[in-house]
Image 1 (cartoon, rainbow, N blue to C red):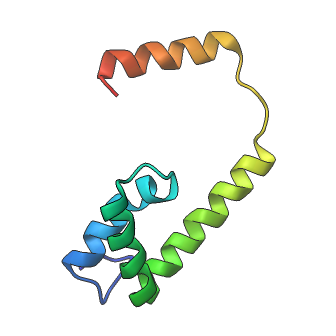
Image 2: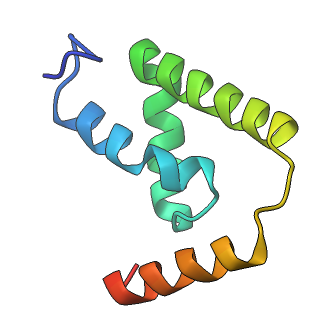
Image 3: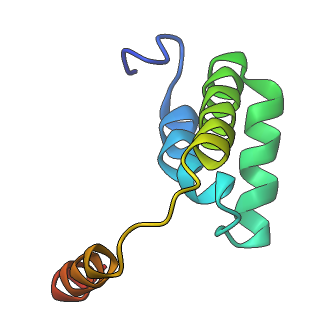
Length: 84
């Protein structure tokens, strides 16, 4: 059980762990179906997914400026160095 989802168990923890990838469309189809079903059945997780989805939409809409090329390159170098 976590503070964010007081009535949740292992299924919720798994769903919330995969939520970012789910929202980014980066999960395999089998996991998408599993997470989608969990969200349909679990209000706390669905509420969290809805919040995250709305937050992402706001960020996309309001933070559309491009980063300076030098910053982008530094970020790429750090990601490469960490293996991300």
